[in-house]
Image (cartoon, rainbow, N blue to C red; front, side):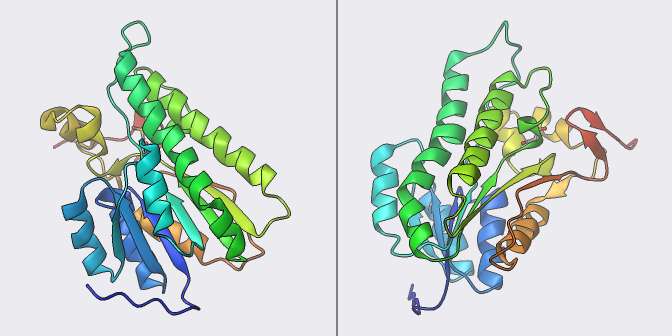
Length: 251
Ligand code: 8X3
């Protein structure tokens, strides 16, 4: 695929861009004029999305130091970084918690966000108007039963993001945390380790947010004037008022 980057076209990097919120965000940012660099592990899917939005697909595993270094080395310019890669595994109670699930959630959500942000930070500063937009979760604000591993990881992502904002004050980099509630993606299928019936039950009788709804918000944040920092957004479906308070219609 041919890819031409003019010196003045801003570049947006999106992690976890092979599906869901990441793929929708890559499309949305391309539509408002960014050259998009898409990172994810699933290269086939990634290349398809990249082709759709005239972007560049680069393999990226945010849990792997070498993969992040190789990815960042291929990104010459970065104006916007969307830290989207992440996910949940399991809904075990604390008493029954699976350490491997927790380890993965910490690695992909927290350390993954840290690795990619660190690797691209100097380029964000050099852009003269950089932005880090991190996709958190309502789970970062509200603990819920069965959520402890994901709650802990997303609370940590929120802490990292808010500290980054403090530490970058005075530099030309904005930092935003977008915390969605229920979004219909393969999030629940991953959480329930491929159990489609359990995943479907999460969205039953509810009109959840779509990946495009979140992408639209990312795009709005990214296109505010340089002096405006949207610090935090909690966005929920009308059918959801808190992590476990959801209005379900009868079938
Ligand atoms: C996903 C939302 O409520 O399943 O980030 O934790 S929730």
